[in-house]
Structure formats: structure tokens, C-alpha cells
Amino acid sequence: MSTRHPPQRWAVIVAWGAFLSTLPSAVWRLLMLNGVLPGTADLQRLHAGEEGYVWGLSIVQVLAGVLALGLVQGWGERVGGIRINRWVPVVLGTLGGLAVTWLFTISMTTQILTGHRPDQYTVHDGPLALMMACYLPILLWGPLLLAAVAGYWRRRRR
Image (tube, rainbow, N blue to C red; front, side):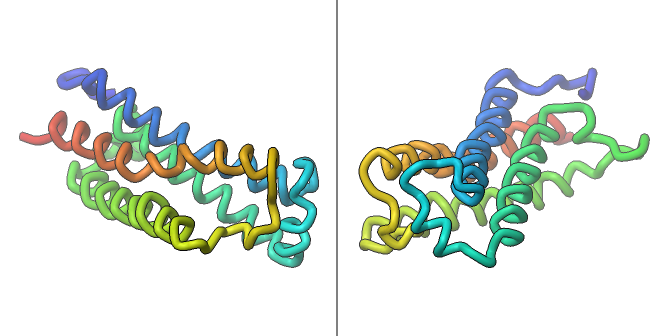
């Protein structure tokens, strides 16, 4: 962590929020894929043959969430002892934040509101409520990431 300018408390909170918002849906997806969640057998069959994609998506999602923590941790300012130019995290974080805001907060919400559910109506009742509860936090990922980038930029600007 930069000792000259430690991260703002609010920036630490939103960076952790951005990371934590990626976990529930990724874990739910992997549990569903492995047949652990009751009421998701039809969805599991729907994704038969896509196990690598689902695992990869979940891993990339969580690793991208971890990068948000780099905005408030020392390891996010240096790679191998070399200081990272402050614009790299700002530009990449902003692009990433806009992308996940579009994908999850805007596009996914719009699709659901217009009757296009990602589960193709294969999950019902209690399992559907659990799925929704696990996917709701992902709606915050983009806005929280953008807030964390703003905190990073404010702290690292000249």
C-alpha cells in the first residue's frame, strides 16, 4: 500500500464490495454445474458439455473481482518492484467497470424484465429464489468497481 497516500476508507469498502459481489453467482454456478443444488437438474442438463466454459467464466469473474482489491492494496501499485503507471489501472478499471455495468446491471436486468431469463425457465420456486439471491450482488459489481477506480485515481493523481 502506498504509504504517502493510503486509500480512502470508502474506497477500501467499495473495492471489497466489488470483489465480494462476484462470489455468490460464481459459487452458485459451480454448485449447480456439479449437481449440488436441488431444483437445478434441468439447468444442469441444459449446460451439459459446457462445463469448461462455466468453470472458466466463474474463475475469470472471481479473478477480475480480485483485481478490484489491487486498487486499494500495495500489490496493485507494483509488479516485481516496478511501480505501475497510475493510468493503467484507471483505464483498465474504467473499461472493465463499464463493461460489467453494461453486462450485468443493464443488459441482464433488461433481459429479465423483458422475459428472457438466463436459466430459460428451468429453475422454479425455492431454487429460483436462491439463484436470484446469488445473482443480485453482481448487479453492483460495475458501479462498485467504478467507484473504487475513482478512489484510486483521486489517491494516485499528482
